[in-house]
Image (cartoon, rainbow, N blue to C red; front, top):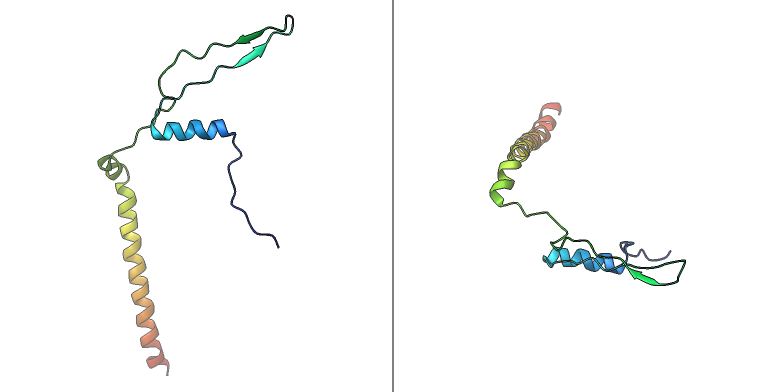
Length: 103
């Protein structure tokens, strides 16, 4: 059998570089697209978009915001830990008591 290779994203290198630049917080400018006119054969450059701001609008939430938003998840996890602990204690007690009772 052949070795399994790690899956790599099927994206052009320009898209990967643009994504990395956005992650770093750099301003990403859109490249100028070049097209040819079929009638005259002249090369025209399309104007870039007027926006010079960054292309992403995500912001990192603060820890307080995360705690406020996911408080119900933490409560549910605490309940699951308590219930699973009780079940484990019940299994251990049953393992110790049942052999003595049954024989």
